[in-house]
Image 1 (cartoon, rainbow, N blue to C red):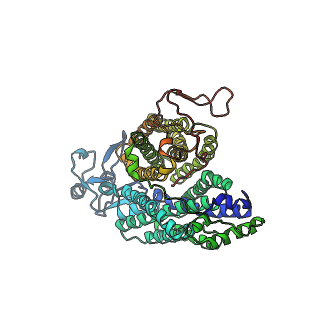
Image 2: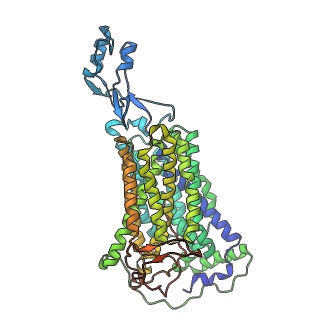
Length: 564
């Protein structure tokens, strides 16, 4: 077929059709925002201690039966043990007074054999309080969080095939329905195992929504609208859903009701089936030219322009070209080196981003406000990164924000407990840095790989990102041993990745490589960047001995992609 953009150039770059499609497609991303991180509240661990049955203990022994333990240098009531109930009951009956004529440190302790008492101050109920996911079973909470990201991994692997086979629009709406049903069934979970299984389906359907809607938008919209859609639209509407989540959770403190309400929000998307078109590009590739032309003619009518008699011109098929696979990545030392560094970057950024997102319920202060602030920091990050990507070198930009995000996390361990708001501000600023890095690394990676390997390279990096997000809940779990361990781990990993990034080639103001021969080589760290492009005093300058000539063929990059 002829070039699609040339064939549909008569539609213009903007107009009612493009703006309506732009807005309607972006509303789909709202659901991925508030359905992706509700585990922050559903899996939060409230204050708790051993349940003491009514065995006629005196008031002194009722208060003393829970021993004290040291946590992060502070003496607090034990969450997982009590003094042996039969011993305490005998001492109480005999009139002994704890601490006066009985040395409590000599008493034998036992686990919470009768269950736990949970604070209802913040959460009426969640999976932790319902299935006692504390003490020896506290590992089940990060495991449950990880099943969502395992679902992301499976969903990202199959959604591309399904959308290529059955169409982008069908997969978007089928995935919306699957997400609705999965979340609803999850609200009826009778066990932790069922909750995890349904969470896997939630993750698979959610990432399928995101990827399919993203692809649909890039194929339906004009070039100008496509840039706005891929750099700001999808991300900002995702943030709207993310920012909405804590207020819904604040209003509904019972986890089953919360999930049921979140699942029903998918109903509002049903009317969009009649307003969001299928991708004409995909229809053309499937030989359904008449359907594609009908959609384009409808777009012309809405944009008030006249469509030509024949829109898509059939041309001779291009000769088949070689298909590249992951094996081609391993053949070249240069590509192996670049890919390994990209995998480290993607994994580190995902661990930091999702780790901080999942950690909001563990911060001091109101967990609902903390989650809202965490979501709010992403909005300026996306706006600023979109502007900087047009002006500044990718390598310096990414390393700078990785260093900022990681450095601030390392500083948190030095903040005293009396200055919790300072620690909160540092964490939110670190989240800003990770979000900036998140949005930059996608376009940077896409610009590094040549066209013949771009899909393979991005697919491998996306898999590394899923491994990072699966790991993130366990990084936060380290906080149960020491609250600063997650920050030390994420901060150190991020600082290391910022150094690794310095060895990647620069892509700013370079044409996209088309072939393996045009792909740049790994770089050294001898470079100087004084100002972003546009400064009168200077701009980014690489070591001239390592700098390769500009690529003469290919198109300048205007593509950015991201999955949550």
